[in-house]
Each structure stands twice: as C-alpha cells, then as structure tokens.
Amino acid sequence: MEGVETRAAVDSPATMNEVVMDSTTTVFTPPRYQCHPMESGRWGKLVLAYKTLGVVFGGLVTSPLYVYPSMPLNSPTEEDYLGIYSIMFWTLTLIGVVKYSCVALKADDHGEGGTFALYSLLCRYVNIGILSSKRVESNPSYSIPVLQEGTENKCRLGKFFERSIFSRRLLLFIAMLGTCMLIGDGILTPAISVLSAMDGIRAPFPAVKKCVVVSLVMLITTILLTLVMIIIWRTPPLLVALYFFVFFTMEGVYVSAVLTKIPEGGWIPFAISFFLAFIMFVWFYGRQRKIDYELIHKIDLGRLGILLSTPGVQRVPGLCFFYTNIQDGLTPVLGHYIKNMKSLHDVTIFTTLRYLLVPKVAAHERIVINKLGLKGVYGCVIHYGYADSLNLEGDDFVNQVTSSLREHIQHSRNSLPSHRQEVQEEISAFEEAKLAGVVHIRGKTRFYTGDNCSWFDRIMLAFYEVMHSNCRPALPALGVPPPQRIEVGMLYEA
Image (spheres, rainbow, N blue to C red):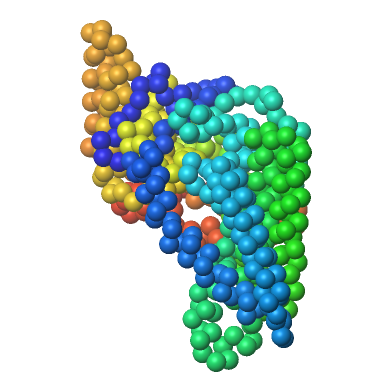
C-alpha cells in the first residue's frame, strides 16, 4: 500500500458522501484488478500450465491405481479389467476433460475457481448476496465487477431466486457445503493414507480413504454450473438439459455408490463437512442480520447534524477514525456514542473496510475519501481484495489515510485565492487534530433476542454470538495500538 493516492470527488462515485446522500442512485465502479505480470499473455499462460502438470497428471496417474484393488472381484478376467478401464477412461474424459476443462474453466471468477467462485459469479447477476438491493455485472473491458442499476433481461429462474429467501439460503448452504467437503476430505485423507501403512489402523473406518465426499462435490459443481448456464450465459435450453442430464446422472451414480460406505466409516468426512458448513452459514446469517439492522437504523447526514447541534454536545480535540460496516449511511453506534458521550472529535473520519469481488486492488485505488458536508466530518472507504492482507503498522495506516485526505482537500477546490485560503485553514485544522491525538472507535455489538424472535433466530444468533466473541477484530490487523482503541458497546434487537 505504499504510494497510496486518492481520486478526486468527481472520479469517486463510491464515496461516502454520495452513498449517504442518495443510496438509491449510486453506481459503483470498483478499483481495477491488479493482474500479475505472469498471468497475462500467451507465454504467461504456458508457464502457468506447465506449473500445473505435476498436480493434474500426478492425480490422473495415481488415482486409477486405487480403483483395481477396490473392485469386489474374486476371479477377475480380462473382460473385467477391460470394463473397469473403460469406466475409468470415460469418467476421466467426460468429467475431467469435457466438464471441467471445456465448461467449468469458462465460469471462473477473475481467475479463481471452485464452488464459491461459481456462487459469487451468480451473486453478481442476481440479487442473492448480502446487499441484495444492488446488481453487479461484469465489465468486459477490465474483467472486474461493476455495480449497475436495473434488473432488465433477467430470466425467470433468476427472478425466482430473488423472490425466495429460502432458495437463496439453500443455494448458499450448498456452495458452502461443497467447499467444506473438500476441506473435510483434505483433513482426513492424508492422515489416513499415512496411518494405513500400520496394520489395523484402517480397520475401524475402511471407507474413509475412498474419498466419499469428492463425488458429491462434483455433483454440487454440476448444479451450480447449470445455474450459471441458465442465468448468466443464457445457453439454449436443449444444451443445458443435455449437460445436466449427462453429468447429473453420471455423478449421481457415483454419489449413490459412495453413500453405501457411510455405515462403514464414510460418515466422518460428511460430519466434518456439515459441521464446517454450519459454522460458515451461522457466521453469514449473523452478519446479514447485523447489516440488516444497521441499514434499517442507519444515521444520515441530516440526523448527524441534529445530533451535533443538540445542547451539551461538544467537539473535542483530536482525530477520530470511526469504523462503520455499511456504506449506505452511518452506523447506529454513532448515535449511541453521541447521545451517551455528548461529544465528537474535531476531525472524524468514518471508515469502512470494504472487500471486493477481485483478488487484489491496486494500491493507488485502495483509499477513497470525500467530505460529508459537515465541518470536520469525512468519509473513507478502504478497498481490499479477498487475497489482500490487512497486516499494516498503525502509523502507516494513519499516514496513508491522512495523506489521501490532504490530497483530496487540495484537489476539491479551485485555484481562487479565497478557496486557497480555505484549503489551508482546513488542512491546518486537520493537522492540529492529528497532533492532539488519534483514536480509533469501533462498535462492539451484540444481539438481544426478544420475545418476538423465532426459535430459528434464537438458535442461529446464539451460535453467532459465541463465534463473534472469539473473533479477532480488524483493528489489530491494521496495527492500531491498544491505547488508541475504543470499543462502544450496543445491543441490537433481533
């Protein structure tokens, strides 16, 4: 994040000011995906393909070796071996070559693959994500997601997922389950492979080594790819039906075969997979409920002005980074803080850490700052890709934001003498507040389950509170020193 710059207000459509003032007409163009130099060009692709040879062909060569011993044949003949080889050949050809090489690789999420990549791809074309009121499409010019208005040209299946909250949650759980099954298989298979060299280790669980969850992951991938074909690619229905029938039938046969191994010990990877998927779903559900509450009880600029003009509320010296989880307004923790503390710092920067659907964000487009229309109040959105690291030093983080703010103040006014004087006064006030002390304020919120909560909400939010209490906040990752941290507690009514 060295050399961080900020864009001018006219070039920053996702700034806090526009989002707060008019959340219904915001059009967001996210930062550009910063490609690795080896990922572009024909030679770069050849180098990446060469690096994958060991993994791909290593699995193709060794996997058939486990097939022959697993076949329950007492006296196998030449025809039996030929039939087994035929099954392996057509399975590897249809699933490995046709499905994954020719179809699945085209449904990548900016170079990323897997069930979550397919799910995030669907989220950008139908409103099934957390912030379901906005639509995301792909920009072919930069291969990055672009948030746009409108829901035209959507198929019936996409509209069905938008209307049905149960189908959206079921689709999310299926995507999570596919990822967790690979994790569960990866936890057990290497350990069992090593320990099976010792006599008697595999006896209690003979089916653990047979990868009972891998075939189910392939089936989940087929379902998600079918949705991508219908909703995004608009593939002709005949081709979609042919693809789904062939691969769902083939993989369904394999799934039905491995399900018979569950009583023999195959339930272990399934149990691990469902446990991990449950944890992921509970975390998602709790985060969604928290964001829904904050969007309903958000504070706009007019409300903030009323709170600051209340008798007894004072502006105290210092620079404050007030962290908020939403961009469509200000967190309700702010109102709770002002009402009880009767103060707000002279310079307050409402900071949002926003993760984008790209692996990495260019350093010069990471920080976006804008003035919110009130004296000493600014909005800051820090963009991260899901492969970016939050590890920073506290002083570096503050210096990067303050330098971006200084540059924004200088470029937001024209060159008239009166405006130059206003710029110098604003920068001087900002520097004085920084010298007076820097403080970072974040909300420490919990759910209060009232009598009107359903049993489902009570169970899910109870698990979420346990997980949230053991979660590390983002401030230590940003390198914020403990003396500068302030946590404001608040109860959210579920």
